[in-house]
Image 1 (cartoon, rainbow, N blue to C red):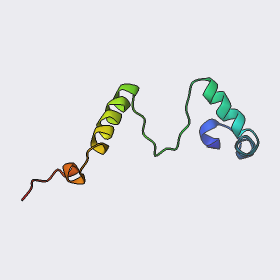
Image 2: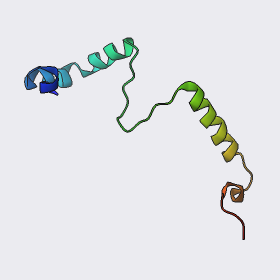
Image 3: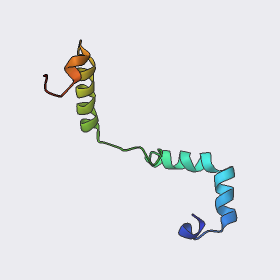
Image 4: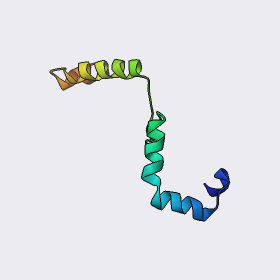
Length: 72
């Protein structure tokens, strides 16, 4: 991190330990969201579509209706 930002390791350590909340607040006011790297973002319309599909699947009365294999 220090090399990538052109700062000393001590400066990075100080920011991380003493000013991290301030840095995150700064980013939030700029309109950025900080989330874990494993999270994936989708736009609002795509999320709404996924939510409708999930709610429809979860509202099925029988678990058998959620099986997508052909019946024997």
